[in-house]
Structures are given as structure tokens and as C-alpha cells.
Length: 410
Ligand code: AMP
Ligand code: GLY
Image 1 (cartoon, rainbow, N blue to C red):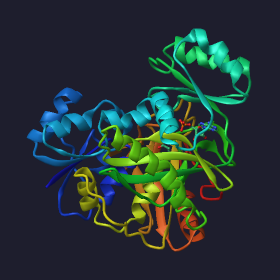
Image 2 (image 1 turned 90 degrees about the vertical axis):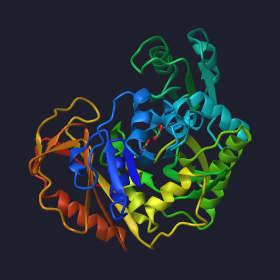
Image 3 (image 1 turned 90 degrees about the horizontal axis):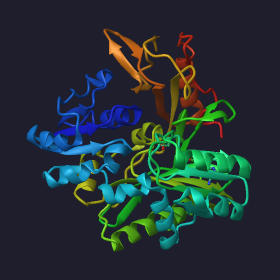
Image 4 (image 1 turned 45 degrees about the horizontal axis):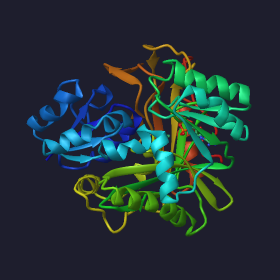
């Protein structure tokens, strides 16, 4: 069978490399030439309209969709209509990520623990809604905003400015509504579950480090590193899974939404209570780079089963720890330069490099994005894998890059 992975970032590197040992023919689209040794590029049309038909005509039997945008745009539906199996929800399920107002209302109806929130659809009601909220708040663009749509506002003046900016300018893309949320404090955990046929199975709990700099300082990024599993008292993670993923999936099923793929819940945990900050309709990036290497299952069979509505009774994970540290271009998540050489040196065979914003020129990498890639390791102790990763990173000799030195230290 021919398998296609859609997306060309670090998460998709992890997806492709997790399938490397399968005997199937792997393909990638769009192109990340650093992964040509695993999967050739499938030269198909760039527009989604043409894409589904061309993928079917290329003889692809299973498509695994990495990023949220094609999911929210309904690529899974088009592929399914063309008779291709897809790992990833259709447009209706992907609304959990693509429409935060819809997601919050669904969480309310399904009884999923959440912060207090209000939805604003009209700039005229900004004042009324904000005057009812206790500051500080988080203000979120309801639609996709490239990971930049959640903004902290410490007081009502800032909240007013942010709310207007989202609704009245194009800075966050065209946004019809915003969600204003109670500011929650605690520890963030990434819960991911495989979902099919109204059922779910939890993946090991992971943590992302969202801030750019050590000690959780600096601006929010797409994620500077991750580790798994997070240490959570026995039974508690399963309880949160049932309150959060279980109730959501049951509700979706009642509404006739056949969700197949990964459901990601970003959680804020305080004591033994977890509340949902956000839903994503795909694997986290960089959580996938830490979690996928922990799974010992036949990954192709797993993705294929989920795409056909079948969940395994359990997953086979080893008693291992896993960690990924992201290498980023200096300046990220703000302005950064592109096209500079990235020399990661000879990689320790115990480590994996998951390329993201780099392209290969001959034997060398050139930067092409903000997050250049992640160095990952799995092993029997966090201390050992962390030492291995950081020993490798110390050999990096570029002026133009940075990475956090405290991944896994929470
Ligand atoms: P989101 O785009 O919803 O994942 O938000 C990005 C980041 O903003 C989260 O990982 C949190 O660090 C923070 N965040 C979002 N919503 C809240 C909230 N209601 N309270 C506290 N922090 C939040
Ligand atoms: N690491 C968080 C995300 O993928 O959205």
C-alpha cells in the first residue's frame, strides 16, 4: 500500500520516521527534502480541490494529515469521498480547533471542565462583555491564526485594544468572533488521544515548553521542546481523559460527527483538577516528536485502523522516557533570517534529528524557517536522555541559532 503524509514540519518528520520500518511505500507532500531518504515527494497539485483526486489517481491508499489547516479546510472529507482512507477528522470534527467559539460551546454542553468564558461576535458588545470579566483574561481569535491568536491581557484597557484588533483589523486573518477567557494558572499538560468510532485511547501524557527562553521567559512560540511521559498520580490522567476526551467524543457521536484521528487537549492543571485551554484536531508539535518514539505498535496498522474506525484495545508502550529539544533561528518567534547554514554535526546514533525549517543542499542544511528541527532521544532515565541531547547540541556552532537549555526540567 502507498502511504502519504501531508505536512512538512517537525511533527510530520516524526510521523514519517515512525513509519520508516514498514514495508509500505511512503510519500510526502509538500516537500521536505531532508526526508527524501525516508519518503519521496509526491508531485501533485497545490490546490486542495485538485489534491484529493490526484492523490487517489496516484494510487495512495492511506493519507495521514499532520497540520490543522488542511483538516479545517475539509481535505479529509474530499479524500474520503474519493475513496481514500484518511487519518484525521473531517471538517466538522476539525471545528474543535478551527472554531474556538464552537469548541467552547461544545465543552459547555458536554460538561468538559473549562475556564469561564464569553464569546464576542460584534465589536459593539466588547465593552459589555469585558466589564463582566475579572481581569486578567486571555483573548482568543476564534478561527485559525497561525498559533498567534491567544493573547494575554492584564487589564481592561489592554483587553479592549486586543479585542478590537482581532475583530476590526486583518492582523489575525479574517475573524468573525473572539473568545474571552478566565486566566488559569497551574501546570500545562498536553493530552493526546487516538479517536475512532466514538471511542478513544490515551497516548502518554506530554509537556510542551511554549515560551521562547529558559525559565519560561519571553514570547509564546509554537513549542521549544517537549517530553513524555509526564509524571501524574495513577488513575488521575485516565480520569481527566474520561472527563475531557470521553465526554467530547460522546457528544460528537451524538451529533453525528465521525471523528477519526488524534484529539489533542491542552490542559491547565491545578491540584487534581484539569481544565481545557484548547482543543487541537492533530498531533501536537513538538509533542509528537516525543510521544511517537515511545510507541512500540505497528504504526502503519495503527494509523490505518484508526482511519477505518477501529481502535486497538491498548497501545504498546515501553517503560521509557522521551524528550525533544527544538533548535530555532535567532529572533524566532519574531523576525529571523533564512538561508544560513545549520551544521548539526555527526549525530549520536542514539539520537534522532527531526528536520523542520531546514532544507538540504548536498550534505548541508540551510535554514528555511523559524523552528529548524528537533533533537530527540528515548531511554530509561530523563537525566541520561537529556545529557545525550545537550551533549549533541553543545557541538552546534552557529551564531544564528538558539535552543532552550532547560527542557524537561519542570
Ligand atoms: P492556545 O492557542 O489556546 O493554545 O493558547 C496558547 C497558550 O496560551 C497556552 O499554551 C497557554 O500557555 C496560554 N493560555 C491560553 N488560554 C489560557 C487561559 N485561559 N489561561 C491561562 N493561559 C492560557
Ligand atoms: N505544541 C502545541 C501545539 O501543537 O499546538
